[in-house]
Length: 108
Figure 1: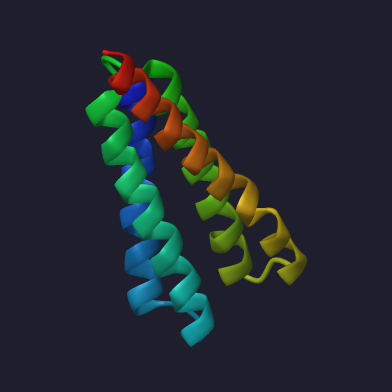
Figure 2: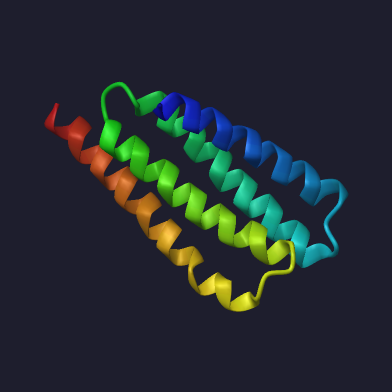
């Protein structure tokens, strides 16, 4: 299940990046799409890399990336700017996921 979600997440990230490069309404919208796509893609790959030994952190990374990127994508497509206040929730989950993974690997 984690692998499937990570693969879908990566596909969405590539599509968002392509749309940002070729179809965004303006430079700010393109930047939101680029940033969301980058974070989503990196964390999809990270989740695939650690899903066998750190399942909880992998899920946390995917959830954080989804929230982080989705809020940026929504604003790029015209959603209200207050949605940007939700973006840090995704970022916080990403930080938690990385710290949790580090703790698991440190414990050995």
